[in-house]
Image (cartoon, rainbow, N blue to C red; front, side, top):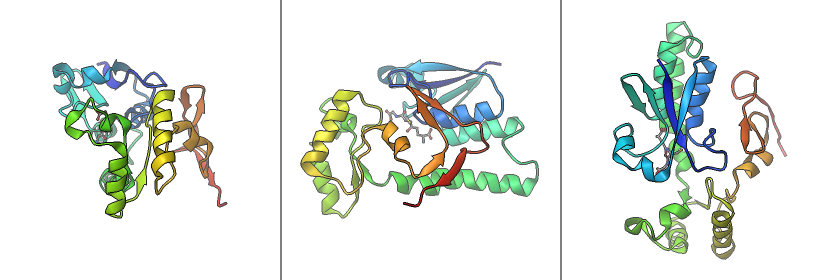
Length: 216
Ligand SMILES: N[C@@H](CCC(=O)N[C@@H](CS)C(=O)NCC(=O)O)C(=O)O
């Protein structure tokens, strides 16, 4: 049965895994399962057909015959439970692996995302309900002692330019995430995924392929 996942249509990498679909692709690749990728636009993600697959109108989704799943954790768990190679065979080791899956999603990820993330798209006039001038978001965060980071996720030059201007005008408490490639180039970690043009090259080494951590 063909497995179909969804990814962003309009991203600089053309939906090849710079977003959370990476987790699902990774599990599928590790399990040696063939799959197809359906690229979706931001507009279609909020339309009925996609909402039937993903109630929050996001990516990735996972379809396998009659089964439709969303949430990367549940998708990866589903793949790992049905195919060998991802979970250890020993029951206790398997339980520990599942524990770490929950920890990654429930304990590790949220505080990482706790920094106020001033997303240009989220603050734009197009989304009137949430619209608030971007400097006001930064001021609000500062007022409450919350760290701030301006990021551009996967913007083109215009979006990055606007975000950089915002940082220049208001400042942030953390390094500005204005270019995904910068994070790889400046990473303290050696080894691991790298860019080749717009493609993310996953390492062939086990796990994340990390070979070391620079201390300076
Ligand atoms: N908890 C979800 C998060 C999914 C998620 O945040 N997807 C992002 C891409 S990485 C998305 O679709 N964002 C577009 C939007 O929220 O409108 C998961 O792990 O699958």
